[in-house]
Image (tube, rainbow, N blue to C red):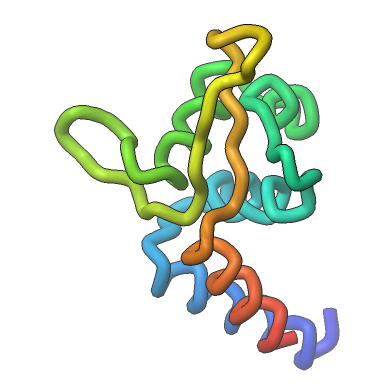
Length: 109
C-alpha cells in the first residue's frame, strides 16, 4: 500500500470517528447506504451484500440512525422508514448529517 493511500484511509477513519462511528462494520454499512438509490437500503440488502447476520446488519443500521436502543442513542447519520407495501421492511438512507460526513470523507481523498 502506498503511503498516500494509508494517509487517506486514516483521514477517513478520523472523520468517521468524529461522527461517532465506532466499528468498521458501521463504516462500511454507512458507505454502502450512501451508494444506494435515493430510496435507501434495507437491512436485508446490507445482510446479503456483506454476508452478515440479520442481527449484525440490523444493529449496524440502527446505530447509524437516531434510535439505536432504549438505553443508547445512535449517531444520527441515516434516517429510516417503513416500506409502504410491507411495514416489516425498513429502509435506511442518508440524512443531511450523513451526507455531510460522506462529503468530508470524500474531500479528504
